[in-house]
Every structure is written in structure tokens, then in C-alpha cells.
Length: 354
Image (cartoon, rainbow, N blue to C red):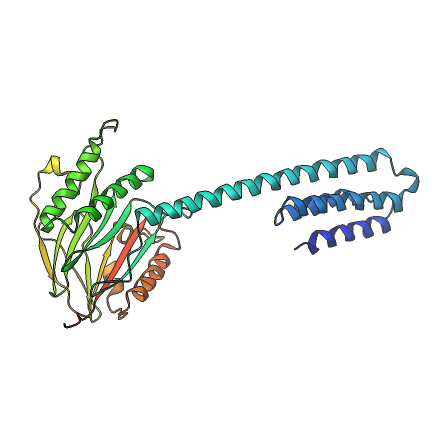
């Protein structure tokens, strides 16, 4: 890349010296440090700017020996010095901002790992893969959430979506994830766990100093309990998109018979939580996701038909399944999602016999 501005300066000097007296190409030398600033740092940009000034002096010496310090050449040299200095200052500021952005990204990625911890590949008899797709190119975390906790005989999972965006959504997601991790292995039943989570969200909205967001902030969620030794899975759906079980290429949507209101609306709705059950056998693939998947639109405004698209897929590896789903989803929307999307693929494996 450095050869480009140097070659440009050499070409300008040669052509200007050989050209007729009424043709002056010296002003083109300013392009050399400008090109360098597009890919190099302040030191190299400054060096090329100095070489551009030297090149202008060479032109003046070879073309007009008696007019080296004429007003024309002096003006061009001063212009090169000013432009070169400005470009060096620009490079210094750009590198400073780049370092700050790198630090911000590092903090963001660290916050994501703390709040939204990656799920382990193996949880009991379950093989697990997770994926988070942020709608914003530079975003690392949003209001979508998921987590898994082991109990003595089962795995409990949550997948959810906070209403809203920005830091408020991240804060609410962190609160719910913390409450789930703290209570999922202690609450005896799924109903008690969901009631506790709903209370945690409601208590947060009532914290002193918080604006009144009752009825405006809520979290849709699906909470599941997957036993190690039984193919029956218990689920409480709090206004969240239903899971999908993929068995031998056939996709089945698990709709809740009596869905509960989203978490955070318990004080308004006084819900009675109903536990739904479905079969999740060895070899099946269970897909949990947020509405950013099924509400993804293509160029015509059509939603992504998740169940129809994955019907017939035979990937038994959760990682391979999510990789294909990610590619298919991004192809549907043309490469950019309109909302964050989280996905968890789970495969039940045979339980080792004691």
C-alpha cells in the first residue's frame, strides 16, 4: 500500500518536470499523504507528507531554478505542510478513537459473558448449542436471554425476551437471569419457580428511585424442566413463542394449553400457572428461540416460517443445526435482522446405566 503514494509522487515529479511550462501538476502531491492516511498511522503519514514537500522542492529546482522561492512554489509548499500536518493530527485522533472503541468492545463482550453466559456443550444427558444474533452490528448484548441450571435429577432452562431495548432491557435481563440461577435449583416445583421469577421482576419495578413501569415492562419467557431419566418435559409458557421438537425430520410446535402472562405482570393479572408437558425422547432435537426469529421479515415483509423451514432437516448435532438455521435466517432477511434473536438447540442423549 505504501508503494501507491510513493509511485504517485514519482509520477507527478517526472511528468511535471517534462511537461510544458504552462502545466503544473505539483498540487496533485497532496493526494499522496491523503491516500496514506486512509490505511496508515500518523508516523507513516507524516513521513509521506515530508516526502511530498521534498518532491515539490525538487520540481521547483528542476523546472525553475531561478524561481525556487517564487510565490507559486512557496504557496504549494505551505499548502502541503498544512495539509500534511492536518492529516497527521487526524491519524492521531483516529487511533485514539480506535483504542477507545476497542476498550468499549472489550467491556461489552465481558458484560455479555457475565450476564449471558454461554451454555455448556453438555448438560447432564443433554447436548446443547446456543446462539445470539444481535440486530445492531456493534451490539454484543440486548434484551434476549437464556440460561440453564442443573438440579439433582433434571436440567431447568429459561429463554426469554425483555420488552424494550437499550440498557433498561439489559438491566431487566440481568435481573431475571440472576434470579433464575439463584432459585432454579432450590424451588421445588416449576410453578414455585415461575412465581418467584415473576415476583423478582415485579419487585425490581417497584424499587425506590425507579420510574413507574408497571404494566409497561415485562418479560416473555418459557421455563422448562427436563428430567434426566424421563422423556416427559414440563413447561410453563409466559407469553413466549412455543418450543419446537424435531423428530425424524418432522417439526412439531409445542403450544401451551394455558399460557401464563409475561413475567412482571403477575400483580396485574394474578395468574394461575399451568404446567404443560410434552415428550422429548432420545434422538429428538428441541429448539427454543425468541420472537426475533419468527418475526424476521424478508424484502416483501413476509415473516420467517420457522416450522416450515426446518421441517425435513436431519442435523442431529445441535451446533450444526443452529449453524444451518443461522444461515437460512440471515438469507431470508438479506443479512441483517430487525430485532435480536436467541436460539437454543438441545438433543437428548441416552442416559448411561449405572
